[in-house]
Structure formats: C-alpha cells, structure tokens
Length: 205
Image 1 (tube, rainbow, N blue to C red):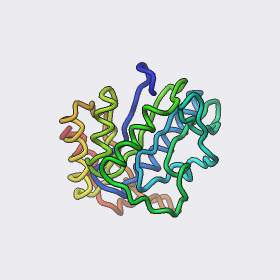
Image 2 (tube, rainbow, N blue to C red):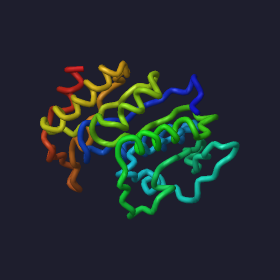
Image 3 (cartoon, one colour):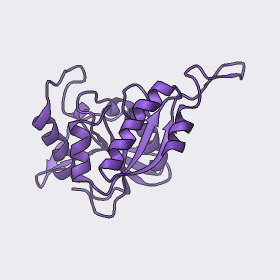
Image 4 (cartoon, helix red, strand yellow):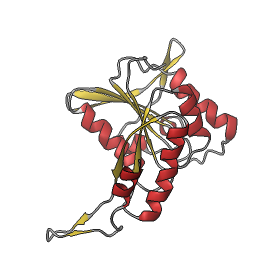
C-alpha cells in the first residue's frame, strides 16, 4: 500500500518511443541524489525496462504478505523498484490482457510495501487503456507528467493522454518535451525531430 501523504506522479504519453521510461529513471535518480527515497513502479507490464535502466536486479521477496521493492542507493538517497522485469525473464513475452493486467497493476500497488518513500513515480505504457484506467481508479490523488517529442504528430497523440487525465480527474502537472535537440561535437544544436510540439501542448493545457 501507498501512504496517503506520499506524492504520486504518473509519467504518461499517448504513444511509445518518446522516452517515458528513461525520463522516469532519470527523475528517480535525480530525486534520490538529493537524499530522498523514491519508489518507482514500472507499470508497463508488457514493455518493462526500468530494472535494466536503473541497474536493479535480484529476486523480489515478501514480508507480511507484502512484496518488498528492490533497492539501490543513488547519492544520498535510494530508489525502490517494482517491475515485471524483476519477476519475469527479460526476453519473455507476457501474453496478458484485460483483467490479468489490471490485477497485476493492483497487486503492485496494494500488495507491496511502499512505506518510507518520499515520492512514487509510475512509468506507464503508451495509450489510455486498462493500465491507465486501473491506476486512475486506485490512485485518484496522483498527478501526471505528459511526455512528448517536438514533432507535431507526437504532440497530438500525447494530448490524448492529457485528455484522459483530465477526464479521470488527474491533475496534469506539466509537459516534458524530450529529444528536443541534438548537440553535435562541434557544439551546434540540431532539431532533428522538429520543433514546437512540447510548447504547443503545454500552451493548450
């Protein structure tokens, strides 16, 4: 279970490939480096990657019928992680859908010991399907960060995630435009994915 006072932040987008998982990992490490204990829930049941991104491995244990997230120290703080990447082989395809996926996400929240975390970050799969709806039902207090790339097409798809958050009474805290520019060795910056998508979405919201 998650303590009532713990801020919960959902990292979301309408499409894949915009960097939700890498952003979640970097945000978790940045917060931990300030001395915080950061819970990270990898809710991308089919596309789990945070165990590898955070360099966390091992076997998930249970205490008092609660799963114990695995920990890794970063600077003055620590990250606590639960992910299907810790429960299944990394190259194993999970042929799950519907109620099975919803139950797995609910167990990560209700049947896990998240005590002591200062923040809980949730990496979500693309879209607004079963997992997003389950999270909205179980964690009505959470906020959302919407991730997009600069390309206008990505921005329009990300807008659907923001619309889902609003319809689910989830507060949209902001927009992150990932992959904004490439800085080459000469120091020049190149907007290889276009420009304006993140700013346009933030202004719309």
